[in-house]
Length: 164
Image (cartoon, rainbow, N blue to C red; front, top):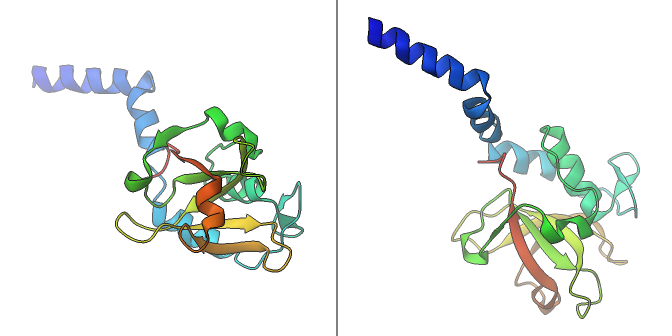
């Protein structure tokens, strides 16, 4: 009984310091919910500088909007992904990770486009994003291999710690 009381006290102290509660918060968003929620917006038009489903999304506005729905903070601008999140190897990525590309000029090796990975490990790398493509823009699904355009622009994949 005495040992149980001591362990309970330690556990409560641990919680009050936020150590365990931060871990629980970080792991509280089921990734399937995030992926399904993001798919609701397929077909929403591209709109530069916007993060509103009513008006349209730019790429980072879409990522920001989806993660914000789950109370997860992400950068509002793609350039801010330069030093954001934990970098993940492409063969270790999973749904909920963020894929980062250059802008339309692949020679400028700074972030300019982002999307949310929706495929599972072992599947073809698929992501959802808001594309500025004039013919086929807006929120859509794309695969990493569908065009050499994505491969030459690829910079990295980052993991947001609050998803699982």
